[in-house]
Image (cartoon, rainbow, N blue to C red; front, side, top):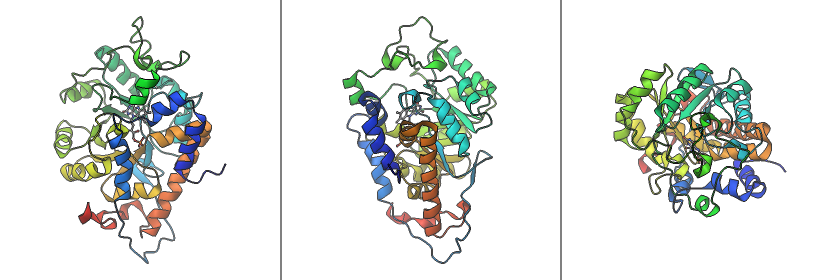
Length: 355
Ligand code: FNR
């Protein structure tokens, strides 16, 4: 089977994954309006390409928080990679390192963060944190991440509770018994693990902006906040001293009928005024989507579901294929739009007035 674009991997995953795993990966909240809108919003943006710009040599490298990556696409945190491939997050870490990009490992990984580190020493990795009611357990996670070489801490802000994903409810989704949310195993020993194979009511819905100061006191790692969608929250994030913002609606899995992330990006970038780096995830399915996001001010984008499709196809190799296809498509779009390097990408490339 020739894999030409990311939809080919999606079709493969849908065909070969067990239905319960496919449904969990694909799920959006409620009517899935925002999940689908993330993709549709990219299709509404038109380019204004520049011609005759000497694109004989193209440089698609960039830096995030000072570290160089081979192109501006990283891997968003997603849970339970063993549902896609037996080696789980270890394969993800190896693929990210091989492609020289950033992998954000989820709290809800099926490998421990130490196993993830050991699988791909030296790779650029950030750790994504959900704050649990058991604050000591959260603190331990942060400290383990720092000790095992993770270079950034991503606080996910949009999940005080899990959104209502109908197919997961219908399927009674939970992890098969041989898979574990290994990062949390020690923290919740003895508790009755129900929902998704997680301890019940373990997330802390009382988290506020002040908890950023708490995190700051626990770690020297840069803090990146994920799940921001408005100028007001972007301003609060900057004021609370974060180093980066990921504009995200959790792939449309939380509050349905919020904005598409590419639409929200514009107002967040405007509010931030270059004070911290802004990234975006949700609905990136081809290289030209990456170009649009960068033109609208994102420093880098992250992919969620497409990475899972790559894993489902062929583990580490499949994920590398997904990244390589996106990389080639991005290089081509950039050149066709008249840019020889990432630094030449700007708002002039899109019909901004129509947004
Ligand atoms: C997610 N997402 C997510 N986010 C997070 O901060 N921690 C997590 O554990 C998870 N888990 C997770 C599982 C699955 C199956 C999906 C699809 C998503 C959200 C993820 O980081 C990202 O915001 C979206 O996936 C981006 O949208 P696309 O690229 O999937 O369209």
